[in-house]
Image 1: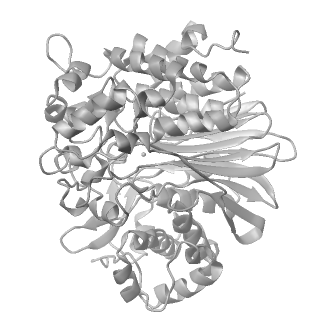
Image 2 (image 1 turned 180 degrees about the horizontal axis):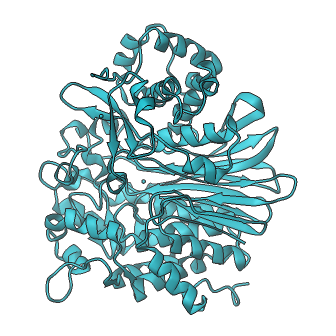
Image 3 (image 1 turned 180 degrees about the vertical axis):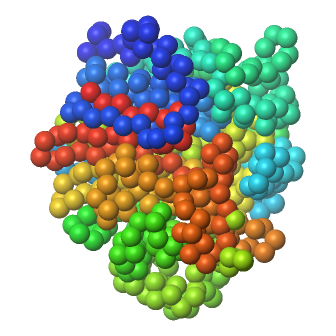
Length: 572
C-alpha cells in the first residue's frame, strides 16, 4: 500500500483542483450536501480540505485517515488563523467491526510553572474588531500546551490504515504551491496588522517583499510550514514535543515572559476514554467525550430540558414565539458550566450540577421546574414597545467526528509563529478557567462532537464549532430527532445564535441571522432581539454544525455542511 498511496493534489484532475481553489472565496447560502455509499466527508470550512479527505477514502483509507488529512489541510488553507498544528483536538470514533465507540482528548494542558493564572494579562470582548484583538500587552504567559499533533499521531496509530506520512501530502502541497487569500483570511490579516508586524518571523510570512500584506486573491505560500510538515511526516510528533521545534517554541515564549518549559511539552499525553453514553427520548442514544470535556453535560442537559418543556409541541421555533422563547432559554443554560460553583449553588440551592448529574433526566426535570419559576442562566431584557469541524464516514461504517481549534481570535494577540506554526494566546481570556485546575493539568474544553445512535445502531456523526456551537448542536439535533429532518434540512432551518450580552447590565437579547425569522415571532417571545448581518455572523455568535448520517440497513450516507461560508460536503 505504501508504494501506491499518494494523496497529493498534484494527482487530482487539474480542473477539479482549480475549482476547489476558487471555491475557497465563495460563501454558501445553503448547506452543502452529498450522498454516497463508499464514503463521505463534511467540513465547516474549506471545501478543498474535504476533497483531500475524500481522496484518502478513495485510496483505501478509513474515516480516521480522512478526518485527520482533512483537519491538517484546513489549517494550511486558513493560514493557521482559527486552527493550528499546536492547537487542540477532540475526537469521537465509532469502530464498525467491534461496535465500540472511543473518545480521544488532545486539548490544552496548562503550564506547570504558571502558579498565578489570574494575573495573566489579556482579555477579549465581542462587539468590534478592536475589542476582539484583545487587551493588554502581548505576553508569553498566554500560551498553553497544545495537543493537536499529539492527537493526530495517536489517533492514526490506534485506528489509521494509510501510511502516516501520506496524510501530510495535501497539506504540504497546499503550503508549497500556495492558495489564494480568501476574504476571511484577508479580514483576519487586516484586523491583526499591528500584531502580525510585531515579530520578524510572523512578518515574513504575511508580507510580500515590498513590505505590504497579502490580500484577497493573491497566492499565499507557506514554505516554512511545508518544511516543518515534512519533518513531522517522517519524525512524528516528537519533532515538536521533544525536538528542535519545541526548543524554538520555548525560547520564543520565554522571551515574551512566558513560563512554559520543555518539561511541559515532553510530558504531554492524549487522553483516551470510553464515551459518555446518554439515553435520550424515542430510542436515541448519544455518545460523546468524557470529562474534563464538558460538551456532553451541556448538550445532553439541553436535549433533556427540551423533553421536559415539551418544546416540539409548540412547533418549530422559527414559526412560534413561545417555542423560540423556550429554545433560547434552554440553550442558554449552558452558561451555568462557566460560573463559579458557589454562584451556581446560590442560584439553584440543593441541586447537583456535577458532570454526571447533568446527564440525567431527573436533573432536567428539576431544573426545568426551577426555570419555569424564573431561575434561568440567561437574564433577558424584556422587549420594549435587538473553532474547525470534520466528520468522516467510510464504506465500512466507521465514523469519526473531530473538532479542532486554535481557541483564540485569529492567531492571537501575541501572533507567534515557530517555523510556520501559529501559537495561540488562549490563556489570555481564560484566566479563571486556568485557575480552576492545577498547574500542568488538562484545561476542560466545551467542544461538542459525538455519535448519535437509534435503537442501538449508529445513525449520525456530528461536530460543531464557533461561539454558538452549543446552540447550533442543540437546534440541529432537535431538528433531526424531533422534527424528522434530514441533515441538510436541519442545517438550513432558521437558527438562533448565542445570545448577545450587554456587558454593562449583564442582560441578554436574542440574536438571529437577518431575514430568517418573522418579526412577529421574535416579538412574541417577550424578549428584546437583534438581527445579525450575514457578513458579521462568524463574530456575531453563530454556531457551525456538520454531520453525516448513515442508514444502518442500506449503508446510504448523507452529508451536510455549514450553510454560511466556504464549507462543503462530499461523498462517493
